[in-house]
Image (tube, rainbow, N blue to C red; front, side):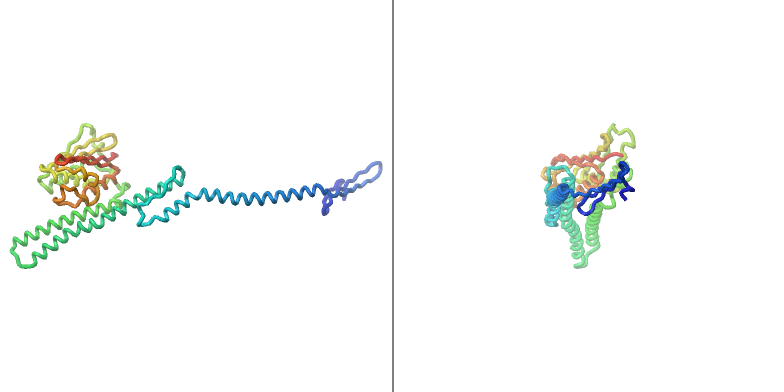
Length: 348
């Protein structure tokens, strides 16, 4: 084999064997050497031990270091989970602790807090809405029941029956109006969504509101004024729900006429940049300063109008409608001077 290959190297157990074939001076020489590299084997054995030791130590270090870093990196999430887990119906007003960072965890915390704020508002609204709505519905029903019971206690003449029926009819109309407003208020966030809005004309809705209110009450004096900045009909187009906008406008106009001695409301329509501004102005009894911060709360009524018929839903409904249309509403009022309601709606 050595003669064929000329040079052979192989290892047998711990020995390295080398075979060499050469023809020299007519002689056929085959040289075979065998040796054991004790020093090299010791170095290789030591190297294997060092590599195994380093691998094991590195594995342990990486494991514990990785756990430490992972624990530190996941601690904000763990803290977030713990705080969220503690929030229930009795602690809906609680908020998650925010950090000064601007990473994804901070954004998630901010999103949770915004969601909790919306839920808190919804629960507070429901807490106030249900008992007040029940009270407002119960009042006309109690009045109707009482009048009918009194009328049936003994025989009466036709005029007395007519008077009783007329009073009952007024209570039923009031109950019907209250029910319609409650239905609109509770359905605002449902089927009436911005993606279902159509192109509407703000001035047409105002004119329709004026016509319907005057038809209901001939004493109402409603005037609509346009500014010189309106150059064409397309400047008054907006995306919205005409029924909801009409309900909101009629509430404001009706309040202005109802609480003014001359039953008059002036409406000023103008276009400012990409928004339509509508100013409703009356010279009525005004709103007390201490009531201005609460006029948009459901069922809240000012101290100077509690003797007048009403339910305190109108302005709350108006605000909900305007905000749904991405508009703004503000009220400026002085006692015995009048009230100004300013609404802005984005134009298409």
